[in-house]
Length: 559
View 1 (spheres, rainbow, N blue to C red):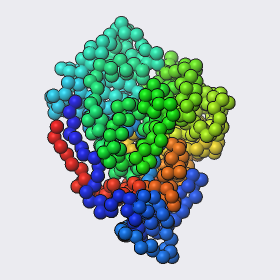
View 2 (cartoon, rainbow, N blue to C red; view 1 turned 90 degrees about the vertical axis):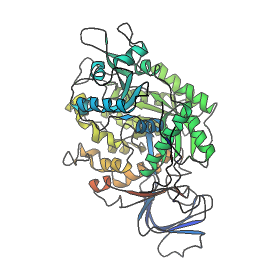
View 3 (tube, rainbow, N blue to C red; view 1 turned 180 degrees about the vertical axis):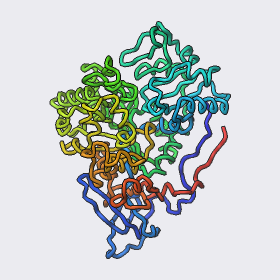
View 4 (cartoon, rainbow, N blue to C red; view 1 turned 45 degrees about the horizontal axis):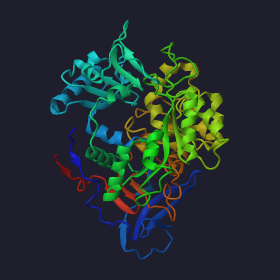
């Protein structure tokens, strides 16, 4: 696989040297703590180690700093934390075929055909982003649909949620998937009606059958993807992210970036399963590396699939598929054994659970294991999209962190209504109820499933509406959160969720000087205006690493 090689995102226009005694003045600054208390300031004094030395009020005497920056009255907020994304998938997704903007099967086929024609040297065509719900298809696409676009080589395309793969006939043949191939545990091969012949879509664990046949990216491909992902995140004001599902290949790329001095985004890595956790970190979580830029503190476990592919594990059958309750990917014993193995060596556990049965089982396991594993564990449940109202109070126990993605509600509400039916919508994307139960909320995007746009996430969180402003008054508006809670969930709470609160997440003396200069006040902007917020500059550790409209630091090399 060949990509355009992007150099590390180091902006040549950055006038302020790294870790220099710097005063950023004339700002409308705000920081926010985990409880939602806002601190206002007009200047930030940064020490030689890239930490906040002092927040200055208008009346305070200005220090004699080596370097001065006049922000000309712009708004400054803490660097934003995306508490759930997939770093490498974001980078690779931006460098391969992207179908997220297609609105019909025919449009997707045209895009696939055009991409294949533009890349005749690629032995496999890979990409992501298809969504049969957006297409109004009423079914999964098939291998025949994909063959109509490209049939001369394998094509493998991940669904927008990453829980299903769409394969053409060549890809199925290359993977040896036939009518005789059994469904793997925790996975499903979609079959043609009336037969066992594979239809072309592989759900959850069945995806691995095809992915094993696909050529693996090389180390330099991973480096290119990381550079691209950092470029995207910094342009959105994201200075720290929880990478959910870190592989050894991704970790080695992060280490190369740190060793070579171009790691910019702070990465809280959660290993892709217990074997990867042991391989990467060994007997205990790693220390913070590269001036608090990288740490592996936990492990990501998958308990169920996603709503879009009907893999989320439900207590009752899907309203639009009465014979299906989803796909539990682990047995109860397997889940507890894996969680126990991680907790034994002080690793943080993050469990992917979307359906109400999945969330109930994750809560059951946490409650049981908390009797053995005491202390500050910060158990996490990722997504928490569909919860039985009877289980919501349980999130307040044992310090369970609800790691949720507000943009999913805006994107998925019509699908959720179809999957669950109107009688079972209570407890879906229930941010306010879970917050009221005492569970810390940590917000993210699940990028590349959704765009890593914290401002769109905040807008959804405070309004329960989509980019079009619909539905009027918000979808189940009783589950909105206050602006302060939304901003805290993208800053201080996000840092806390990854054990980073003593290093970043707020702007206060002693913490890393991670902040974003934006063009509007998130405490005052309407939801529509908040979605239009522009990031003007992004600073990490007292170093300016992104300036809007400045591409001087992006160097491209042909390979």
